[in-house]
Image 1 (tube, one colour):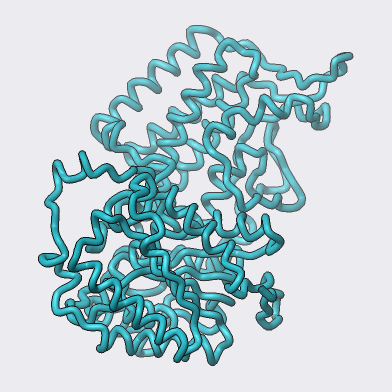
Image 2 (image 1 turned 135 degrees about the horizontal axis):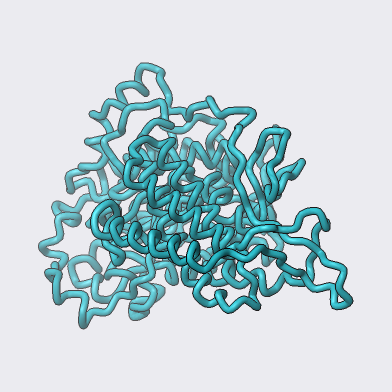
Length: 508
């Protein structure tokens, strides 16, 4: 019962998520030529973005919390932020109608970034502020769409496809994550249940809260991944330098039933990507990043005026009402046309949530409700579930598990297998029997092969609010699983990776 992949990755992956959404809103700018234009913020060093991301609401209101922070007097904005925002939005909307290449969609996204930044710069005391806050949300939706359009051009990874769209995209994201951050300390692997079931950011934050700060976590979950697929990921696809210090394999019995047809692995095994891999041609990202980008982004700046109350003052020139009205009318016509034709309908535009994030995690917000879930879906019992056909725990999948355990042991990488929670609706008599056989077998294999087995399968059988369907967790369940793992004192959490150093682990 693998789930379809519901959303695409962001265009620039980890770097783009930070630099094109959060960074401009925090007054961080991109590299420019030495002659900086007016109203462009230049910095001599990059600003670190915290791992914990901000919600759109916190972004919208952060100016309200920063009115007592000041910058140099010569950095005053001489433009009406609202007028500038609408102007950039018009440029973005116009270019959207003709954009085809990755570069053109990146330019569209750049315009939306500037539109968001200028609209956010509307003063908290301005009568336009409430309207501007709504426009920020609207512009960020179009920005997200432009980023996703850019990802449709698969030009960054020097590799053929592995006949799995989600594996291709997760691999691209993982390689980009390594380029930006380095190999993660903890890598989460498994099927869609892992992809949706363990929140890496929550795991990072919860570990930091109990003294294990500085650890990095990435979720490399792939829809339909069996034990054979995970073995392929760890042993063949990744190089030793790309491996983590710890592996958390989150999944369940379905990944180990050798009686089912392993369609995902069979597709990977016969893919062009695997053929290239067998010939020594490894997937890699392009290294043609320009060292001196010439594009300067124009963001609002403010000044500290010499007033006794020392509050931030936004100095702006008056814009003719007719000009602003014309821009707004044109913008409304363009965005309406986009929604009707060039872009999907407004209710189909991708939201800022329910998409794979920069850490590889797919957080879904829907909550499983048995009373409504089966109105449009068939109720399939375990007797007719193809994932349980010819149930057998003694074949290739278990061999792959043992191979992974030996692989991790040789490299001194702790392997923790987490049997993820299920609902009581899912665990009918047939599935419950298979589940019990699986738990008993895994406990024996863990002792024999030196990995840790944690059984959470029946932790929340009636907590439907933690699930998006009978066997997949939603974002709230994923947070709860991450917190459950953190309080497990038998897990030897690693120390943050030292550059060029060996792995070390906390004593539990």
